[in-house]
Image (tube, rainbow, N blue to C red; front, side, top):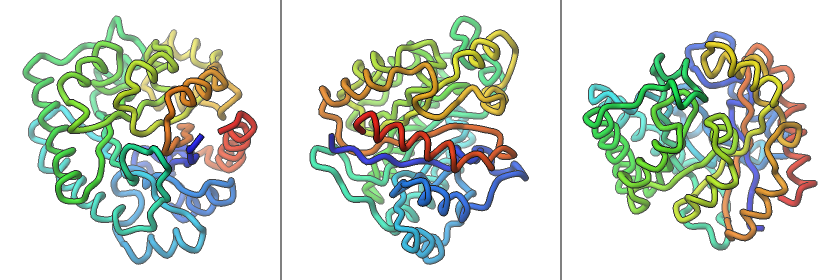
Length: 307
């Protein structure tokens, strides 16, 4: 399999850049390298400085590259368009000038990618994982979100040659089966690909392998997570925000949870998937002391499973 395993700052609890407990980005780079990863994602906008020389040096001295940047923000509001495009511009300008990953034979689009995720709506955050009680967007609001995504993807592609990939995310307005199907129709693969996440699909009540296969024709990038079933069952029975569930340990190292990774390996091999898979395990950043051991355990498991 022509696959490279990478990781992401969320494994150290880096999701909300305003959180005062985030570890220094240099520590994340250092521990990613120590755990055996050759690359990682940039993390949310504002975490790693937009300083090409400084970040390039930090990557080169550790033998790392950046596989993707991230838009993790309100994709719905038309008033947020300028901010989304500013983020796109600055992130793509940086990631295309940093040490680049080696491309795999058969890889559809070159990395680095721009993962695009909707976030920032209380009414959906508290309904994460609950399709039956999660409100859906009106047709007008959905159309506005589609236009925002298209604008992001067009800017990334035309100005920087960066492939935007839509990432369905628990607690956002692209999470459940009907929303994934609708966005696949409204934003065609010529405009943006998909980054499907095994953990988020499971959280949304979907079968990860079936979802990967269903959208194989636009699967440009993949995220791997695993879920502790006992914690998942407990948090699903309470009214809780998605990242509060993560702080309680709903995500666990790959291979220790409920997701069938041997089956996913067989599927990706049959699909001839080539490129990058990023390991993620969201947590409370105050528990980042366990991140190195966990990301290494995930990496070691995937090696033993043939990835």
